[in-house]
Length: 360
Ligand SMILES: Nc1ncnc2c1ncn2[C@@H]1O[C@H](COP(=O)(O)OP(=O)(O)OP(=O)(O)O)[C@@H](O)[C@H]1O
Image 1 (cartoon, protein in one colour):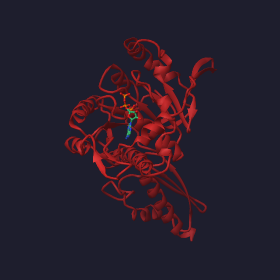
Image 2 (cartoon, protein in one colour):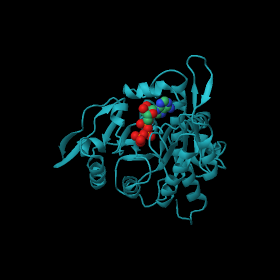
Image 3 (tube, protein in one colour):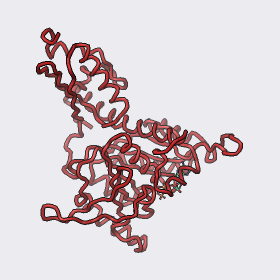
Image 4 (cartoon, rainbow, N blue to C red):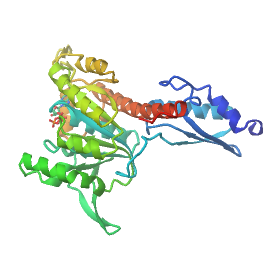
């Protein structure tokens, strides 16, 4: 009975939906921004924060259910609560996730490539920026061997990133010349990095994944200072030498007010393909302990599975494959998207409920 319900009634009915992660329903927390009923359609703008976040898809489904129970059609839009004072760097890129690690070889590029391919597999528009000038692995992991083309657009040279598995890739390594000595490449990368952000034609992305070099050097600082990084994902292996280094890189994020989306513990359990027994080759629980110590979300553990390396070497990220390890990577992708969404919904709640405080 469309003529018996107005937008205020519908807003009240939406109070029956609790945000699963925030303390309150989606109206009180400000997640419902606008409600307007035109003819038999309810136009609702929600302050959701991340495209293809499983949790936010469930919230949207609940909203559709309540609207349906009011005998209306739902037309939903999402307007994320962005950080105050957003820059105009990377226009058209919604979420920027920096993948970082305290030390090399812990699987940071593997996680970055799988995150990019996994988000694209969920239907998002995704780019991967390989800023790891010392070991640019992303092109191989995504099966991309062509270098970016340069095209004139509106009288300016624009870098057109090559694409595979639905992921557009730019690698700083390929642009500063792979045959240059590493020390030169580092310096050149630092100098050209900022220009690069403006010159790549990403053409609108839901997610841009940045594969940072390990540690906390110049390039990481340049990225954090100049790019609107939505959140950082920290990759570690379970043993304490890795987690100690990781703690240092987290403090660097703190300096730039970059929220950390969570800690991933890579190369945790090895399941012997011959006897089926499980071994914690690098120990266990370091990532979890680090997350607890720093009060950051623990995003789970990824197994040590030779197939991860084989698929990475073959240019097909394991997240796109079959089996348990692939499923574990897919779960991680969902949790990362969920945490981006939560970060923004939390910001929205704070701005609505304590509007005098500056949004973080
Ligand atoms: N969970 C895993 N199981 C098996 N092999 C893995 C796993 N994660 C990563 N690897 C392999 O370990 C090697 C190092 O991984 P990767 O290049 O992703 O590390 P990284 O932290 O990015 O290193 P760097 O930044 O020093 O280049 C690669 O050969 C990769 O295929």
